[in-house]
Amino acid sequence: MKERTERQNYFLFFTLPIVLLILLCSGTGLLRPDFYKRETADWLAQCMGQDFSNVFFVAPVLLLTAFLSAKGGRIAKIIWAGTMITNIYSYILYCFDVHFNELFHFYCIILGLSVYSLIFFCAKHFGLDFKAWFEQKVPVKAVGVFLLVIAAAFYSLWLSQSLPASIAGKAPADVTSNALPTSPVHVLDFSFFLPLVVLAGVLLIRKNRLGYFLAPMMLVFALITNVNIISLALVTMVKSGAGSLPLAVAFTAFSLICLFFLVLDLRRIKRV
Image (cartoon, rainbow, N blue to C red; front, top):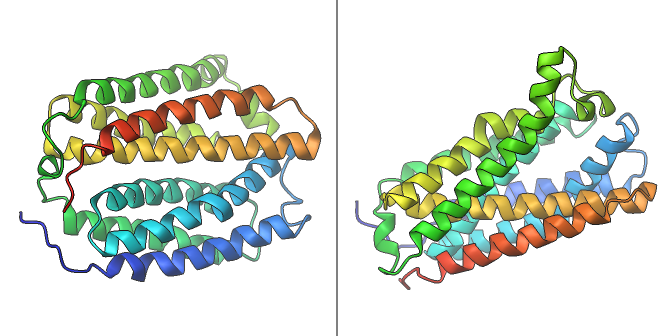
């Protein structure tokens, strides 16, 4: 399938209302101290950390990459897609695991627009030869193996929490502390994120055309997810004085490693 180079305004049609609603919802969460009053202390920190990341990182990245993607920028399209997947992940949590509030319908609209924007993007682009976007010297093994290491690390971490609890017939500690029926992060990671990371790594190592797009896209996902975790760790420190500094430092280091591999990969993209 030949790549079209004309302006692709659908990036803006989807992204502009999403960004405006993100700023409305997350701005409300940050500016109203009692907005998440029904959440536990831990879940309150996660909500506010996500709001902070949404306003100061996710929304600007989505807006900038949408404008550049509309002009045909290849790097921008990859970053936009990775950020939009992260947005879907986040708003599944808002829709299903934040107590019902006056912004519920806006959460649903953001989630729906994000899902359909990604479906539309896939319909338009996934027939392309993404391998042709890149120069020959792409570090496929290094990036692919790094993605598999990420997947293995998080599978091990989450299973160490959920599997013993499942065998013992009781809920994991984080589920109990957040007063939730299950861990939404475990659900999304086991069912969606980690399998996609594995698929991206394997396809890139095998030099499959989709791997060339999925691998950097999932690195963007991982990078922004790390930023969200850093934000919630900082909010926890401010709100409760809890010792979340080691968590923030660890995920800052992890973010820098993800950024290194992302740059290593994206610098090989050819200019249109």
